[in-house]
Length: 292
Image (tube, rainbow, N blue to C red):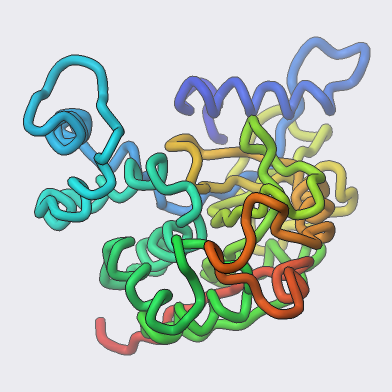
């Protein structure tokens, strides 16, 4: 049995919110479910020095006061602290939200146990391949090719699968990266692609009203009602793990049609056929490294 009270406050509130949606009208207790979260917890792993490092980078050595993010991106790129504290990369996300696909790829490499590359190095390769101008990646095929160029992975672009196939991918050890339309609250939205964004899925929750607690998901767990299936995700606009309805995520992904008026050539690299190779897709990565 998993104790919901031991979860971080924001995640606990989100879990309680989701579970309460499925509670029986006459029952005051929350239902249970089957849960899996992969071991990717950037903030917890960052350690107590994380905030001090961020202040030093962004405030030119000062550890106190208000964070000055103006020009901080360049200071982060120049700072060797990024090499000694890999999770400074996570703060870089807030300064360069367009690099969400590159950050998701960096986190995927960590999830797969591969050697970490800094986001700036991933960006340099993406730029060299002609896939990006500012960090944007508007094609799942481009992200797949970028992953294969940089890491020892087997990568494939798939149609965003149904819940049970998605569970199979995650249980088999895949890192799954999904494009979606990001709303102002960072959740999946329907904006025709104007908020196109990347996230990495790190787990799932299947609500089960027949259970009284949360349990670790077994390998034979099955979703019989799509409305009870949720996914845990990280993305480049928040340090917190998200919990989304998978139905909402699929719907959002399936309506990515255009980058929008604010993201156009020549400032951005847009495929000739628009977002055709982003819409309804996901990128699945598997570690093929043979060394121990």
